[in-house]
Length: 316
Image (cartoon, rainbow, N blue to C red; front, side):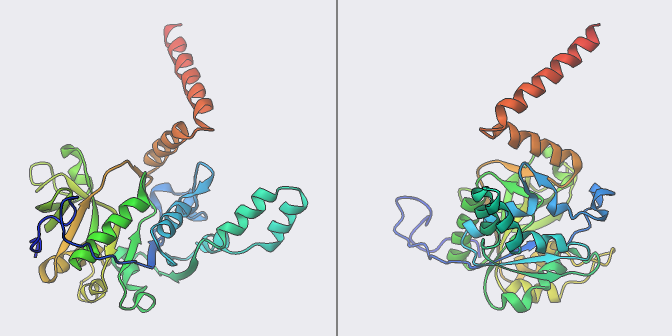
């Protein structure tokens, strides 16, 4: 485990080693969380349906999965999240109304939403953990590898990252997690891996440590919300005991995968945006608005005016 096959680095341009092309056609999106950090809003509004510019958070994940090759998207929801199903469902009446108003482009966009991919839903009851959400899709996924996306995390080059992770998984026949270098003083916010170097930006994961302090962290490489999982993950989850909160954690199952099969990490390039807390969501919204060619100039002007007004109020 962790050693390259004979022939050298398969990812280098000079290598003659052929990369196995694997197309992963199934994706799972975990959208069953309580969203307690956003209460009371999420009492009736799923956090995954919160807007980020002109579309809800979960749409970014669905579009990323489809752009990465997924033909079937399984969304794991929970009680009170039927608006997610409504959002991606067909609304013929709305389409006809928009067309009668001359809003043809909007009508086409509504139709596109309902045809992004084949989408099905699995309901998760109670707070059971990410591992339980994955276990809930076992019958649908079967013996196929699949993508797992957490909507809280958005990536500048999401589909590129997932395609690269798919290549790595296909070559080594192992599960692959996305890894991000975080400031050493923030390791206590993440699941941190102990990496064994394979080739540039690809690591053989030796261990996973849950939110270690800076002094005890084996590295500053954190697991973030994109995974390529092989069917072996289901057996690992079935033998994973619930934690003290009664939740089955995917991290605990990955520790079993490390021991019995092997796990790889891909340190991706590009920006990652976090929306897991109100301040993270607000920062991501502002950042993406500033980088938007249409919204950017107006938002920049507004922020400049706000700053100038604050300065004036201090000086007066």
